Length: 363
Ligand code: NAP
Ligand code: ZN
Image (cartoon, rainbow, N blue to C red; front, side, top):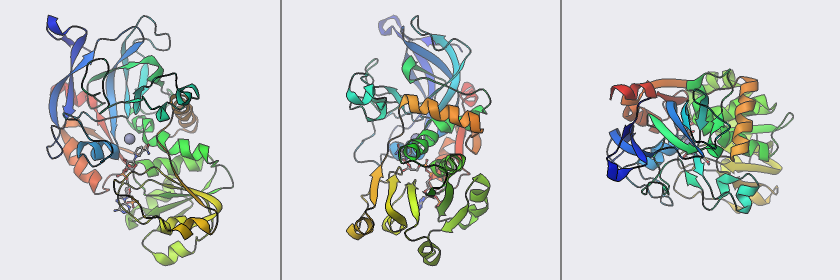
């Protein structure tokens, strides 16, 4: 990896290649961004693969009113790469190691959430992109880039048996589905629903299956049925078919909703058993309508979940290593990212795009 320094007035930073959106309507395009020179606790990573999450698309198009996007925006939080350089205090990694970075690059480390290993609920967490950058000013820039510099605590180890392009999506889609399933006790003997067979949904199916649960996929797409079964589902329900839905009333212990767009959640809440839980990880901007009786009648609960903490992300990666789980990926060069976004917005990907960052070298 070669790095170009800025002029002497702008010391402590170097130039990295990246892809960014200039505003909510413009396609992503090549850009040069500053990265900090690695400090004593930092790991500098040459990025090899970066998955494309629907959150990248929501952010680039400024679809979340609660988290306005600062432009230029360099998305990407499913990062796998090779360590290029480490700071003097780093013991966990050395140059040449394969390493990974997910949605978080910092947190205050001192609040009760951080102390409990829940960095993802720290009030002062720094997201991998579109968060204030305390080192360089402006906002953080994500993984659609040739390199990134991250504090060692937020850098993860990747099991050596996993394919790197397919492992990248574990850093968001994997942990976001693993964390709530562990929290709500998904295990052998439980009936688990997964709503939406996209990037997150297909990881949820693989993980729930590996945890031993009976897995039912709810999809709007007739043509995903065979895939769902191959990925580990025991049953597939076409969610627009009310007869098929009715058959499952009152029977689920847990349902994970990974849908990126507006939809009726009451039709799923009704499928939960007494004390069953439905967790939302899908994040459409528009509020859901919840009928009180969908919850009251069987003491059901509805909750949400945000990615996962660092220790749990490492646990998930190790679990995936042990069970040989990676995402089903379509590997693309960065030059095809805008086409990929158009297809992702139509749920036309099986089941995650993974960008081969070597393609950025020719830019
Ligand atoms: P994705 O690959 O686009 O998958 C979303 C799936 O939702 C689609 O494949 C489709 O499944 C279903 N869907 C799409 N439009 C629909 C509609 N109008 N009605 C019903 N179903 C629809 O997206 P993703 O990357 O998995 O992300 C899913 C959501 O999770 C996004 O909102 C993302 O921002 C959010 N997310 C949250 C967290 C968190 O920490 N909570 C982390 C990452 C992502 P079928 O074709 O099977 O119906
Ligand atoms: Zn994501």
